[in-house]
Length: 287
Image (cartoon, rainbow, N blue to C red; front, side, top):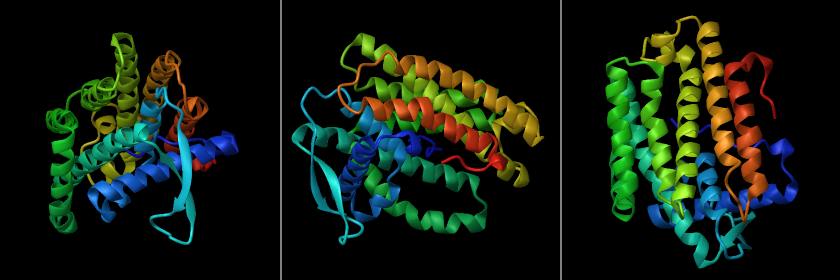
């Protein structure tokens, strides 16, 4: 379901892009260290955003050092260094693993018998690393399990669009709130996470619309709006803009000690670009 949160690279300063890459590469490094080399293939820009968000409130200075790329030793990358960054990257790594495990289970549920074979072959590996991540951060596992169960129930019962989006929205709201420093920040994080989760669910539904209609699979837009692509995506566009407006309002209430310009770029520009590319793909990919 995830994979929609990214920067608008063309509008990002070079120094900020280098900082963004440093967090991305650092997350890759920690993923491989804690969950084996293969887990690095699960790396996503979504979890880079999650890492940036948690690191943005760190009171200590954040520093980087050069090191060899874990994928291409001929290259060098910037990596975050310091004990104050490892815990955040460890959390993001665990969440990457846990959400990937449940995404795999969801793919198995939605696939035909032939397509299930390679998915089942990868399940033992995902199960092992999921158990390890769940032992370290049981709250993430519980929230993800609840999301998965609620999502399946909502889709099987063919509930309304808002009810189908609720599990993902609630999941991100609670995940973000876990790291709030006080009640006020917790309220803001919940608001940000809730509407970002809702936006992600709608983006996924819009992105998969044609494929789901062709394969006669459940899609909340098809069930609740129309089987006509133009009508369904137009409705999704309006709802996504509403969520984008509300999550932007929550984002503006946060104070960032680090990575403020990068986080602004993701929320204020990156999500809009991604939405445009999903809803109006015929206009061509922007940046």
